[in-house]
Every structure is written in structure tokens, then in C-alpha cells.
Length: 407
Image (cartoon, rainbow, N blue to C red; front, side, top):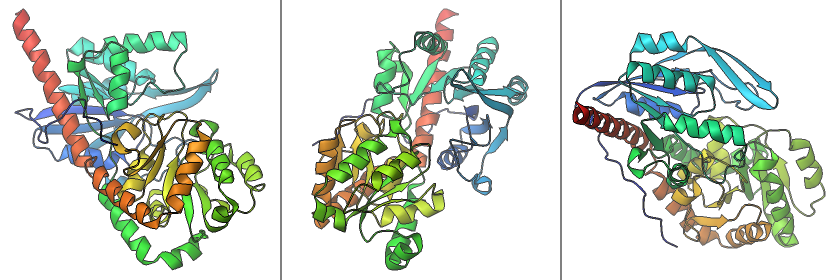
């Protein structure tokens, strides 16, 4: 019941020593990335520009785009998104000219599964610019195992000068690929903790009215995320169904999200009696805190997830978390029996036990929720930004030292 030691630390202050032009490439304008980029743009030694490959994902990501909150230089490339033989494809125009126009001192690329990522890596190699992969994958990723994909992945990793990961699970993932420890830095994944915490406080003060307006049960467990089988939502429903009748009559289950599994989930939920299962649909960021604040705990039963930022959000709102080991965030954010419970993916019996334990102990819920709130504030946008800046500085110094040695 103790925290794992951090794999690699990161300094709180950036240490470029001079102002460097940093270019960050990421897929979409996600709400959780804006606070991090705002914090990075504030650093005295970073001149930041962000290239988004698209504004949003029309089917998987229904987030509002909070452009009014952006405080950094950015552009959105022209793009086409489609599916080829079951694989999602995103093609872009104008990346090469954008890179040449910005002329960065270092490039940080968020992922390797887009053609634009490979183009950026090639541009960096031709122009002698350090190329860094921001990697969030972990060893529990169910998408792994396809031989051609694994070959291309290894090829991409070999072309990188350094790596940034959000935590322990992604660090272990890169080490499994033979990436040297000294080339990996940590920038802890973060959401706007203060925004969620403030909104949760307001929600609790208006709890009765919000429960009525949002049609929420008096007490409930909460799931937030896409309603797809790989998120473990059917396991969660079965775990809820295994709770004692008396407990289900007192505590409901709320699913905040949307996805193709919704019809089947509703059909199965209708067979659970007594009990109350409510599907809230997709909930935008500014309304989510109300759902978190009034819940007993967040249950995150995923079977495969690179991180799971809903765990950050729930912890910022002061919730215990019942989290699956498959989630990349769990080794760093959820300590078993301290601020929640850790379950193996698909372990329905232990999930049900953890839910029953929390539902029967109000003081334990309060204590664990306070611990969650205290722990997650280390994963702040400022800490993530400092990790990115420090990683860039570290990689630049290492490459400069190698260049001087060979001259």
C-alpha cells in the first residue's frame, strides 16, 4: 500500500538556458491539452508553436473546442479522415511548409500512427533538428501484436532522438522496446485540476438541485468514457448486478458517455432489479464536475487504455477510484486501499467487492477522496509543461555533447 518510486524525476524549472523554438505536433484540440500548452508557452526559455492535425474527431471525440482558452501560437492543418481496411487514417496537407516556416529548434510529436508523424520525423532528420516522441502507450494495449504494425513502430522509435512519457506504464513500454533509459523523460499527464476542483465544490453546495436537474440517483457509482466493449463497461454492469439487492436499491450506476455498446448496455441494465442504471450520454467538460462531485466513486474498468484522463478529473473532484491495472494512469495515480482500489482487467468479483466496500463506508469514501485530491495536484498542467521543457533541454544538451565529441 505504498507508492511506486518514480522512474525518472524532472526539474520544476525549464533549463534550456536560452529561448528555444519548440514545435509540438498533436492530433486534435483536446480540452486537456490546452492548459498544458498554455503553461508551456509561459516559460521564459520556450517559444512554443503547436500544430494540430485536425480540430476534432467527428465520431470518437465530441468535445467542445475551447479556442477562447488558447494562449499559445497554433495552427490546424488541412486534413482528410477515413478508414482503410478497418484502420483509421488521417491525412494532412501543408505540414512540410509549416515546419519550414516555423523552423523549430526541437520537435515533439504526440504519436507515431499518423503519416504526418513520419513526415515530421523525416523533416527533422534532413534539417538536423532533434525529434522527440511523446509516447503514451503501455504494455496492456490490446492493439499490439500485428507484425507489420510492430515492425513500423520499432522503425519509428529508432528514428527518435528522445522520448517523453506520462508515467510508469509508458516508461516500461519503451524499455520493453529496448529504448535506453537515459533517453526517456517524464511529463506527467494532467488536466486542469483547479477548474474541476472549483466546479466540484460548487456542485456539492447545490447537490439537491443538481440531482433533480440532471436526473441523478441519490447515490451512485460513476463511469465516464466511451461505451465500447474494450472499456470494460459490460464487466462494470455485471459487477453492479452482483451487488446485494439492498445495496443496489440504495446506490445506482451512472454511465456518462456514448458509443456503439449503448443499446446492448441498456438491454442488459433493464434485467437488473432492484437497481438503477442511468445513461447520461456524452457530457461536456464544464458539466462533468457535477457528475463527479455527487458520485460515491469513479469506476474505471478498462481492458485497454493508454492513460485514462477521466481518473485525473475524478481525483481533482475528490473521488476515490476503482481502477483497472490495464489503465496507464493507475500505477501513478491509484494506490490500492489508499485512495481507491486496483483491480485486474475483467476481475468482476473484486470490482463488485470494491464497490460494496466503498458504498458501505461513508468515512472511507471521504478519506480516500481527500487523498485523491491531494495526490492528483502533482499531475498539474505546470508539472507536465516543466517535464516537456526539461526533456527538450536534456535531449538538446545530449545531442550537442555528442556533436562536440565527434568534431
